[in-house]
Image (cartoon, protein in one colour):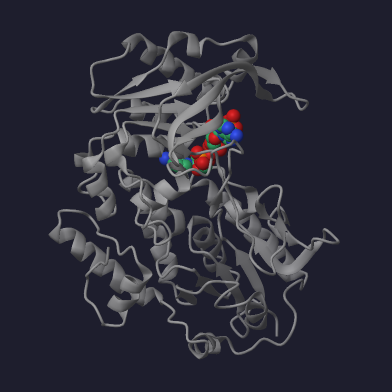
Amino acid sequence: MSLGTKERPLRVAVVGSGPSGFYAAEALIRDPNLTVQVDMYDRLPTPYGLVRGGVAPDHQKIKSVILVYEKVALTPGFRFFGNVKLGKDIQIEDLKRFYDQIVYAVGNESDRKLGVPGEDSAGSYSATSFVGWYNGHPDWRRMEFNLDQVERVAVVGVGNVAMDVTRILAEDPKHLEPTDIADYALAELRKSKVKEIYLLGRRGPAQAAFSPAEIQEIGGLESADLVINAQDIELDETSREDLADPKNKKNVDYLNEVVKRGRGARAKKVRLRFLASPVEVIATAGRVSALKIEKNKLVKDEKGRVACRGIGQFETLPVGLVLRSVGYRGIPIAGVPFDEKAGKILNDQGRVLDPASKTPRFGEYVVGWSKRGPSGLIGTNRADSVATVNLMKEDLKANKVLSGNKENFETVPDLLKKKNIRFVTFQDWKQLDQAETGRGKTRGKIREKFTAIDDMLAVLNGVAKAVPTT
Ligand code: NAP
């Protein structure tokens, strides 16, 4: 019986329910020439990955992609198994018994380090933790940022995550009130004493990673002035070449406009600095009290890219909180080949590679950030996942799939029950979704998330209604 037909549908496990996982499922399910059954697993009871736990609460429009994912999830042949962690609750070997192909869509759940002394002091954290905290992610709900005791913050890195973090700190909390921000985060932001945020780029304005729309949003805040010194955005010859990229040109043009505004009269200041690298996080009595930075100059590296090098001039910024926003990296999963240097699953264009032979492992694929690293916007993942699915179809034709007689697909829930795992179906999620929006309604918010897994399960098990534990 050939695979991918009505008689014998192709069975695919997608591990991870963020954008890349859903786009892979969509590309499989929407193919009229393929009959497929997709089981999607997530370690959390809730689907949607970074759309739920990463996208900033004041960027609700971006979250409307969920409507597309929901359509996929409601298609016959699709099942969701939330609250099931691969490598802990279920093993790769289990998946291989049931499925013809596996797609890893596990994202990048950890972050890059700066590698400077003092980085692990209290008061020096990753942007990942701050983002997870304000978004009510179960992993980060217990973080304490003590914003009521901090007047100055340094955000290291000038990518779009740094923009989100800076905006949430600089914005008037009243704009966050109607959103799905976690209640405890809103309460803390209301008490915040933060009045100055240093936003630090190690290279120059023409190399800044932020998108024009994101920096312009910061420059357009009612509650804060974006302040840039003219000498900080002077371009050298190397940088002028980078202006050929319209994004960079747009950024530099905008920053030149901002310089003309001067320091402004708003209570909060976002001080955007370039050519500045942290060299030490200074702690006093165990807590961050300052960040030492070194001035850089731009140089071309051996590959001809614009890099930076310290010039031995130092400055100390008196900050009580350091948030490093210098990119993400993946966490290895037992049994899945990992490229330690790149921080992602070892793969070639989406085919998982055997670490010894560097040849593709039959039936194992990867999409999204776990395939290519932490780059691109949500939409970038659609084309990326389609590309991997095309390889899956190519391999299916060549019968390069996970071998062996497959166990009855219908018995996956039994296996999980036997392991005593309270898995969450898509119908369960819809129940949680309704409970969250209901709680939000009573508070004038679009949603009040459950932030503890126990609370989510208690609601589903009918033990509790909608009471969050804090
Ligand atoms: P990113 O865009 O790669 O930015 C990382 C920043 O960290 C860069 O400024 C980088 O500088 C800097 N950096 C790296 N290592 C450093 C070091 N050792 N010292 C100092 N600075 C260092 O990453 P991201 O901000 O985490 O965002 C990840 C992806 O998500 C991006 O594609 C982003 O566009 C996307 N995203 C989009 C949105 C949105 O559209 N609203 C929101 C959030 C995230 P160099 O350039 O010099 O390496």
